[in-house]
Image (cartoon, rainbow, N blue to C red; front, top):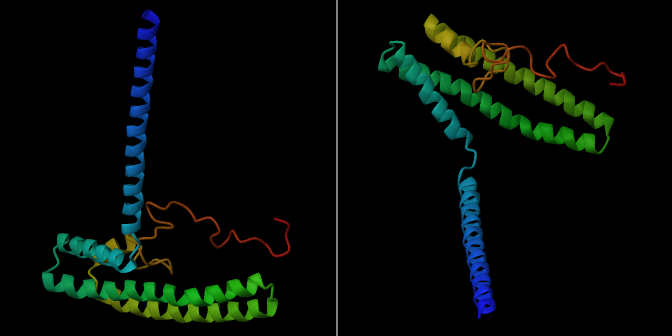
Length: 189
């Protein structure tokens, strides 16, 4: 009888452990499914990111004492500058992909051609952005220009866009691979 009670207790404990393990496993599986679904819903939208960025910029301008009319006008000008930079990066993607294809094919003549096209297009893009930036800066009060400079939107030397700080207060020093750190041709490493 004692052996039977012991055996029954052992079976009961084993059943409880297996039930608990099953419940925990089901919860983890459900949580994992919810996390995957959440990740699928949060896809990157550059336009939404740009709009949120512009709202913060406009709020900063209001906090600096600019009128609603000034904030709207200058905000639209900043938005145009940011959109142009975003559109230019998108337009460059095809050229970059073509260069990658030439690299994959190890076609040096095609690589030279694609590099020339990329350099010419970047020069054209840079000129357009510099012109837009110069016109914007003429309109800005000094405090707003200073804020946009710290945020990496104006006076950024080509790194403008979404607050890229390569040499400012938050981005000390140079980025790896920045100019001046380029590998010498023909060197072993």
